[in-house]
Image 1 (tube, one colour):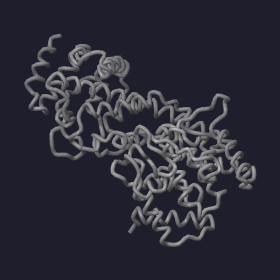
Image 2 (cartoon, rainbow, N blue to C red):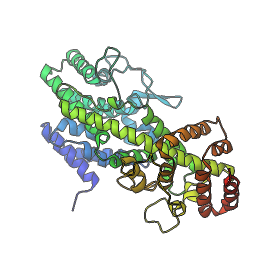
Image 3 (cartoon, helix red, strand yellow):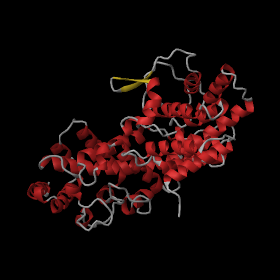
Image 4 (spheres, rainbow, N blue to C red):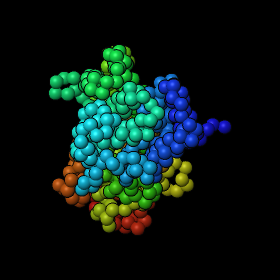
Length: 455
């Protein structure tokens, strides 16, 4: 039988310490494994779990293995704080100021390893931390240092720090045109000189290569050949960052829309050229170009997929508003899990000729029709309503209507006005399909559908 996640975590620690030539007691190994396991299984995590550690860790590289074990152990906003053991370690170094975290104003030279972490991350004592600016990576690194400082040599701790720092995502060149790996190399050189670590230039360059390989592996999902698998991880992140989606069958149309809206906005602003890093020959030029090209393709397809999902949920939200207000998604769409023996919206959506602009062999069509690579805990694997919209309108017409939906989301137009901007065939079909499922709204939905029938 396969070992459990606690046992696998302990084993990964043991192999990493063996690789560094470090002796450690069995009880200490156990304590580290349990701490990491507890932190990574906090309720609310659905992507940053122990499985993510095992997928990321390179068992042949002890530096990267230890980085994998610690790099996501702190996820302050998702976990809504720290588990008690981590809190005891970190609280001397941070202050909570107006619901934000801020580094304590510890004088330079007071704590040498704290100074080293600050230098590797280019942070300052007293600095306000940001979830999107390296907060979790920094605190995870600080925890790692405090837990391993009596066991692992400082020169090896710095290499682990570099790997974790490199996982701060989506950073392009700085104002001087330097890539982040080049900046990281310079910081390691400064740390090496200031703290007399006696790392050679070759060792520093190797540390940066390890960090780049590690950071690229952390986001390797962006280079999936199967866009459905790329979207799988996107969907795993949704309930992590939107607590309401963890309540299966109860979350509302509005809360689901807001979750999709955040993800669509994130991907809409993401520059795929910033996903992966390259330093010297890591990764080799041909491989790097392949990864970047796939990132562009996956992000572009995901933008369209999310746009169609957002338009679909916007239509449901507007119909809910005009017939009584927000309601659970399941009320309007029926069963939201594969295999549930109950009504689904797709049973009430008609079949019709596909718009000439729609390529039924496209990746986007396949994702809507057949679904992402696997089912999620809160949503259908396929997208029947979004597929209906795509088949009827095509992407360009749907994108134009999406702009009107966003205007409604922002409060610039009301639900009635938004619905008036939709083709009558679309809105009457969806309203009548919802009427079959939302029995408490049936009369109101059918009345509205009838009012649009001859428009």
